[in-house]
Image (tube, rainbow, N blue to C red; front, side, top):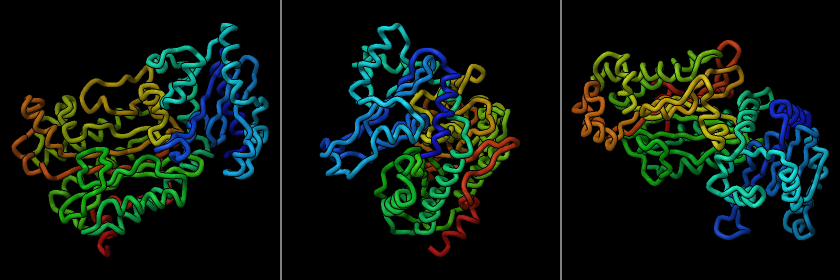
Length: 464
């Protein structure tokens, strides 16, 4: 938990940005894995944590900008709870730690919201993403389940995004910690990987590090020799010579701030010539993007510049053809990189994605594209000091997608489909770093950068 003043100042700023109605923040509840009392690891709602800081289930809170009051709703533990959980601080004590004066039992929440509605005041709430929250909102507000997301308060979403996307010094310190845990996870896997291992062995070690040094992985670990499947959570394969191993993983600190790195390793420790060529294209695009990041530039501009590096590299190899600007303008490169260059990150690995990406990654000036590939760019708007972003160009050879484009003649004037036959078993490559936008450019998060060049990766793996 941060200093009390951090949470007080955040709520005060929110009252200035949204000065009418009542803002309702729903905390998360425990969720049973296979019966009610055997629960998944608890994860508090990020916006509730950001403004109220209390990391426990079954809480809610309101902020009333008109009266200036904040109220926390939750229950003190019973003797039965103490038997299983041990003594716990009172709700009053917890509220004092984050500067909240009002405390009421949880069962008073519905009555409070009902009174607000009767007075004709608006209840602002954020889009719900868990069913138990949806049920509670439905009961209190009378909004049909299918309408809860679109009825969420756009004004509140914009006010929260305005605050949460610009990281303060306390958050940056946490994200450096998360990056250092992520470094240890990836570096350990890089040093352990060897032929004959099962992918699951590496996943287990990485997840163990994330839990021993933080709370948990910031998302389910992606680790697969089928890297052409962008989010591959299958870990059953044996590491095999001449295959590529994509590892996309990060950690959450105990304060729930995230990291997110990707490295692509040769399963046997040495890249083939074909792998070297594609890997070098991707690593060049990664570095160019990092060098370009600064306040005032849009991330769409950075994405398209990285796309040109990818396209030029593939033109040089004879896989693409034609004028470089035309190739990128027509999206021919997206056959090989159908995703965006990166996303914002903070408490959520895809920060505030529960609000909807267009509220987080776009604004009134920069609108989401409709073109294949470019429309998958999660963050397109102008960069500001304090933004935290991932930079993750990739190059993938997806046989089903290649065949679709070939059969439908999509961008056929720019693609040498016959030459792609030699890449159908290639897999994919993705290289991802986390950066903080500074006053004059950006810096990598964490104390050290994971090995990223071909030579550095092979050297690190040479003794495996």
